[in-house]
Structures are given as C-alpha cells and as structure tokens.
Image (cartoon, rainbow, N blue to C red; front, side, top):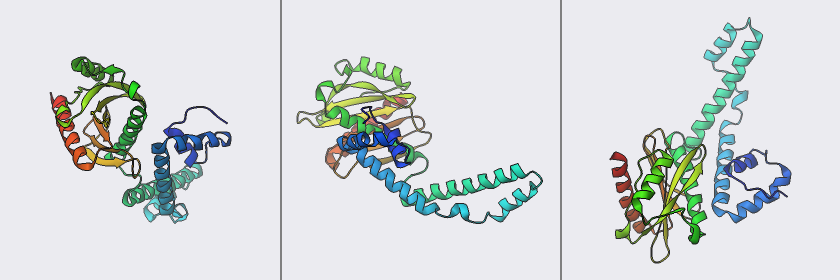
Length: 260
C-alpha cells in the first residue's frame, strides 16, 4: 500500500481509471480522512457521468455536410483526410460535452469553473488549518503592515488584511500556500467563540464572476470572486446572516486595497 500524499490530480486519475491499483486502498483511506476531498471526488464523478451521457454516440454520428466537404477537398491526401475526420469528431465531442456540462450545472464554463476551483482550494486550506489552531499561520497578525507587504510581494498583488473587529474577529495572521505554479495568500481570523474565517487570495481569473460554493451539505461555505486577474474566496462555517456581514465588510476593504 502506498503511503504518499494524495492531491487533486489523484482524484482525476482515479476517475479516469489511471490510478495504480496498488495505490487505490491508500487513496480511499485518504478520501475518508478528508471529507472535503471526498465530496469533491463525488461531485466530479457526477459530472463525468453527465458528460458521458450527454455525448454518447456523438463520435459515431455522420459528419455535418460542411465538414464532409472539407474532407472531400483533401481526398487526394489520404493521411490528411483521416486527420481532418478525427479532428472534426473530437471537436464535436468537446463542444457537445462542454455545453452539456454547462447546462447540467456541472463542469461550468469560463469564470464559474475557475471560481469553483479557487473555492475548493480555499475550503481545503480552511479545513486544514481550522483543525490545527496552534499552527494556523506563518506570520502573526500583530504587525498588519508587515504581513500585508509580505503577502503582496509573494503573490504579486496589492493585498490588504481586512479589519473584522467590528464583526468580532481578530486577525491571527497569514501564510503563503502553493497554488499550481503560483502562490496563494491565506489570512486567518478567529473570534472568542473559536469560530474561524479564512480569506484565500491569488492572481487568478480572466474575467469578472462570483458565486457561492460548498464542499458538502454540512461543511464550510466559500463566497468567491474573480475580477480580472484577482481571485478571492472567503470561507467560514458561520450562519448565513453573520457570514454575509463578515464577507461584505472584508470584500469592501479588499477592493479598496486593490484600487489603491
């Protein structure tokens, strides 16, 4: 049995049937130990099922007349004609699958898909450090200016650490997390009752979009934004009314910092 750490990539490998059989028991144990990742795997499995159902048989359908004409024009070049037919079929599968996923609510297109990936990573970070309060941050929040400068330099963004004292939350500090080939900033807040709020920010997104994302029915919720090269997800397990108050205050301050 493998004892290595598993990642999002392994979820996709497992869904595609490409995860080595000898690693499967350890992978299943990892999912059981990480409810947010298990929920993520279940959602992706549902999306794959929807996609396959939506494009079933598309590759066997006759090519549209306009594409057939292109192939016929290249009949004197058999290898190229075969390539065009395969490419046309692949394109049909891709377009139909992407559209079906968008309409079905899974595999969303554009900013929504980017936002949900951002939110999923933010929830995973929240769950990791909520479970280990003594090591929630790398840099304490006592020196807010230093913390903001440090996070900004590492992410390439002009970031602010919102003041949430009016909502009852103290800034514990922040840390830098790997996010693919980029760096993400994580700010952690906690109130006297031990409730935690985290703000996950990175250079991400090509368009404006926003949404709400939950890793499971009873897990934490992320409110996320993408805004022309900036991505942010604010995560908590607060009731909706209190959550909206915290998120509204935090987001206004973050936008003012970016604009400055």
